[in-house]
Amino acid sequence: MNGIKAQYYQSLGQYAQAEPYLRERLESLQKLADRNPRIGINARLDLSVNLRKQKRLMEAEIEARKAIQEALGLGGQEGDFTARAVIVLGKVILAQKRFEEAEQLGRAGVRLMENAGLPPDSFSILKAREFLVTVLGSRADFHGAVAALQRRDGADARRVRLGSARR
Image (tube, rainbow, N blue to C red):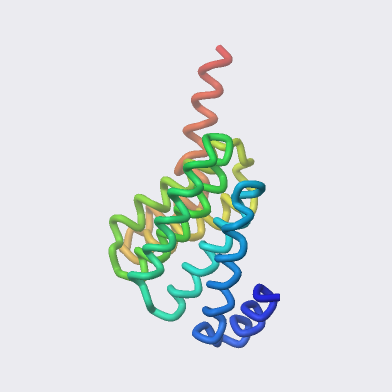
C-alpha cells in the first residue's frame, strides 16, 4: 500500500509527501532481502530518485551509493541491476554539476549492461545511453554525444572483439 501512495504523490509531483511512504516501503522490503534482494534495492533506488527530485542531493547520493553496494553484493550475474544503480547515482552526480564523474558513471553503466549481455538496442541500454548523451551535451561534447547515441561507444568495440575472436 505504501508503494501505491508514494506513486500517487510522485505522479502529482509531490515528492516530499511521497518520501515517508518510500521510506516505509524500503524498511519493510529490507526484511525480505534474504528471499529477493532486488526488491529492497529497487526501493532504495526509488528513494534516491525521489530525494534527487526534491533537490536533496547529498541524501540522494548516499542512498544511490548504498544501492550500488547492495547490488554488487548480488554477484556478477546481476550486472544489469548494478548498472541501473550506477545510472541513478550518475543522475544525482549530474544534478550536482559534477560532469566528469557523471560521464564516468554513464559510461560504466552502459558498459555494465553490455557486459551483462543485454542487446545493444534494449530499453535499458538505450536509457543508459540517453543519460550519457545528456551528460556529454552538458559538457558541450557534441561529437561524443552523437557517438554515444549511435552506439559507437561500446557496441562497436564489442563487435570488433567478437569478430576478431571468430577468426
